Amino acid sequence: MTQIGVLAGNPRPASRTLQAALTLREALAGVLGVPVDGPVVDAAVLAPAVFTDADAVKAALTELGAAEVLVVATPTYKAAYTGLLKAVLDQAPSGWLRGKVVLPLQIAASDRHALAVEVHLRPVLTELGALVPQALFLNENALPAQPADFALDSDVLKALVR
Image 1: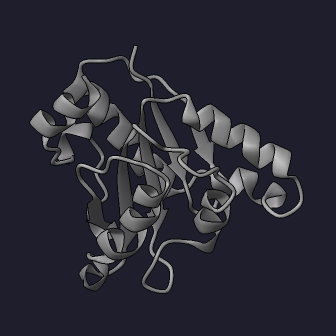
Image 2: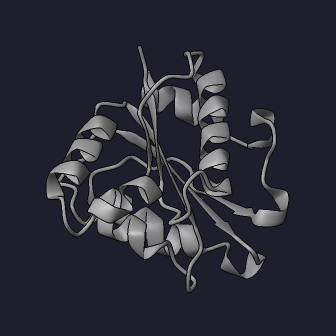
């Protein structure tokens, strides 16, 4: 069974970023015809351990690495993704995402940051081995309440996951 994991890189626990990522996961599950299942890591909860407890971060990365598909979500900070997300991803082993389909989701207060997900987040994920068929940007004023609100290229996603 295909598992869809979520890594939310917002430094605020239970953030709108996490909620958007969970909604995107639900949309992906619908497109792929699989149950909504998989590990969820809220980096805000992991934050106290990021620089003091490598084992806790490694455990979270191992759990996420078991999913075949991963949503990596972040708010936009200083025209890029959060430092917390970077600190977590920096601890991932080389090739951690090899063969995995990853959908980055970046949220910002302004459409002027729409390319940040392509320019900053996608390269880090591909460096870790991810297949990134589609990167998504959302203006925070348009955060989706329903999975159907995400425009996903279902044919591409189905081809990559099957």
